[in-house]
Structure formats: C-alpha cells, structure tokens
Image (cartoon, rainbow, N blue to C red; front, top):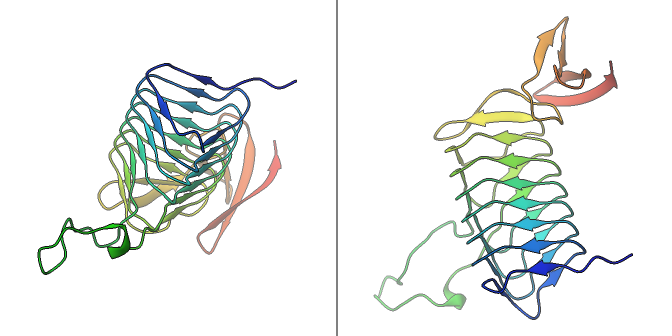
Length: 200
C-alpha cells in the first residue's frame, strides 16, 4: 500500500523532485529540481537537498544540514544538524579577471556516503570524499580523505580513532577480533579493512 510523502506548507520542493513513500519534508526545507529521495526519509527543518542529489531509503537529514549536488547517499544514512556535504574543490566567487563565476565556470563534485553511515552535527565532508558503509564521522570533524567502512573518525582533519559496528557503538578489541558490545557481532581487521564475520 502506497504511503504518500508529507511536505510541510513552508517547505520548498521542486515539482521535478521525486519523494519516496512515507518521506517527510519539514518546515523551511528545500529539495531542488531532480533530487530523488527514497522511501521513509526525514528531511529536517531548514535542510537543503541540492539538484539531482540521490538519497536511499530511510535517510535522516537533520535540521539545517546542507547536502550539495551531486551527493549520493545510501540507505539509512544519517546527516546530523548543520552538517555540510560540499561540492566545489576550488571555490571562488569570481574568475581571475574579476567576472562573476557562472555554472559553466566550475565542475561540481559530490560526496558519497555508504549504507548506514552517520555524519555528526556540524561535520563537513569535503568533496569528492567517500564515507564507507556504517562509518561514523564525529561531530565537528572535517573529512578531507576517504573514510573506510565502519571507521570512527574525529578531528580536523578527520582521522580514524577506532571502529564502530552497525549499531553505531565503538567496537571492543577482544582476542584478535573486534566485538560490538551492543549486538555481539564479531569483526576481523586486515590491512585497514574491517569485515563482519558472525554474530555471537
């Protein structure tokens, strides 16, 4: 059974944007032309979703977060309040001759966020970085290079300080494995890559 999207009257959603079943766009949010949002997404107050941005199912974009085109977000991605996903590697308002830059004067590059990953409040992801599945970017971090799946990164610039499981909890190193204290899932690390092995 189809569940119609809910769009608050003060939100600005382009007629060419596509909203999945059950997606909710809150007050003062803007969803630009060509954006494609999956089912059961939640776009918070004042959030911005740029042209042709793609969100998977079950994404949550918190208040005043800015997701610039051409970002790609997998299913279940969390974008914290006032977080920013950039799209310009060499930002300038004007050309060297002083003329204003136009859409033809630069090439947009996007941030890619893997399934289940979370970007903390006021964090900034500098395009064209990729944040791997189930990774966790701490609040206020500035991501300048790719983040492996399940990595916990903090700081400016962001650096890995641990691993997190699918529940978002830091993993504990026990007997040569990494174990989630919440779910009991077991992971093994090899060459900087974490792999889920089995549930406890």
